[in-house]
Image (cartoon, rainbow, N blue to C red):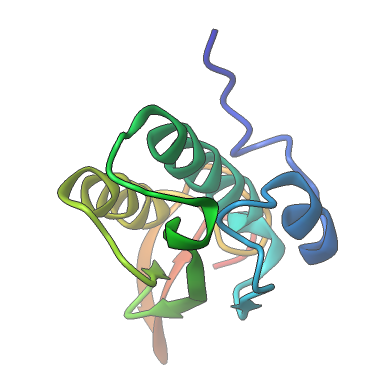
Length: 125
């Protein structure tokens, strides 16, 4: 069964690396606040499931990996070394979800523009 970790996942960046050894094997730079770590975990989990399900790769060395995680214009951006159409849809889904999740705490939020465009909840606005 699917488990939504977006709200309750308070992992450090090292925890993300350890939890997703396939896609995070190169320890990508994670330059977003903790509120989105749950989205990153959910996205990495879906990408790993897709990689394992796929027959496209000849060896583990060929598996796509996440190479950068950042914020841009108030949304999460996850860059993958080689994205199949399925992996592109997964990353796009989480980029879109991030605009409704507070980047500080992970609670439901929305895009706000007070200076920079950010995804925030009422508390962190």
